[in-house]
Amino acid sequence: MLYPSPMKIGELSKTSGVAIDTIRYYEKRGLIPPPARTVTGYRDYGRRDLARLKFIVQAKNLGFTLEEIGQLLTLRSTHERSCAEVRMVAESKAAEIAERIEQLTRIRRTLLDLAEQCGQSSADDPCPILKSMEEK
Amino acid sequence: MLYPSPMKIGELSKTSGVAIDTIRYYEKRGLIPPPARTVTGYRDYGRRDLARLKFIVQAKNLGFTLEEIGQLLTLRSTHERSCAEVRMVAESKAAEIAERIEQLTRIRRTLLDLAEQCGQSSADDPCPILKSMEEK
DNA sequence: ATAAAGCATGGAGTATACTCCAGGGTCAAG
DNA sequence: CTTGACCCTGGAGTATACTCCATGCTTTAT
Image 1 (cartoon, each protein chain N blue to C red):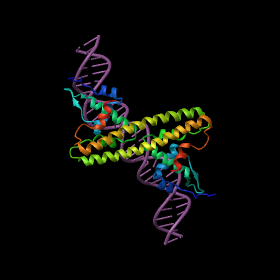
Image 2: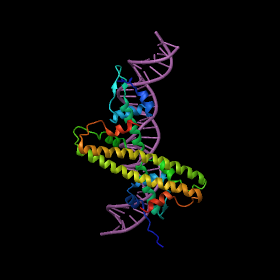
Image 3: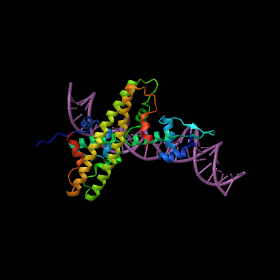
Image 4: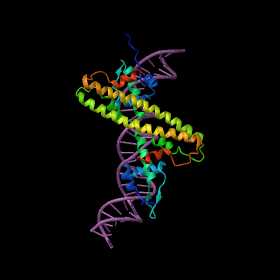
């Protein structure tokens, strides 16, 4: 069995791309659990923390607030939370995300159309991105 | 031909769901063009403005900053901008969005799996959302 | 014609998510 | 055993995106 050497906050910061202060901020906010400490009080992280941090970064880019990300992260077994409840939340979040995916797909489609038009016409007509919205 | 009655900011706010102050803020930021004014100085909007506003709201929910949204909105022919340039920007934005879609799809998949597990197991194992990230 | 509702401007205040000290221990290298 | 790099806490400061006045003109309803 492999006992990994302690990963201090600086290393976690480098491997995750998240600033040290931000990591500590996430800890305060409860997004990452308080890590173990070395004898002298240094934070000591493991692989799980790295994964969690990466997830947070991704979710943030996708437009979730830290609040929402916290909810996603605690979806698993919060002891007092019934299974049916977890299921409902998970499904409703999934539906929400499906909606976002659709919207992104529409915007992307429009951008590609625009790019194509640029290949031949002069693209001087009213913004195609908006045109696609007016119909809704 | 139909000359639509002037839509003042209050009405635009109601139909778009965007607060009056926020609309004015977007105008300051250059996200929506300064509208025509009535004789007495009231802002007078048209259908285009409504579409634009809706687009901004959606894009914001999808995690774009106002800065980025501004770029998307001005993608069309900014006279001094060459067609090839517009095309490149549009394509790179489209690729960016495709990446987001993939990430959202992964998260959604995980949530659905989680919901399913909840149907039968006790969901007391480490957060599946994270498990799916550790492998990357 | 007067009150209530709506709009205008400029500027101050707020929430979220960081970001940056100050002051002070810890640790590896020379 | 000191110098430089790293870490600690607590708290102040910043950027983005609103949100809320104060003051004053316009429009609508009674």
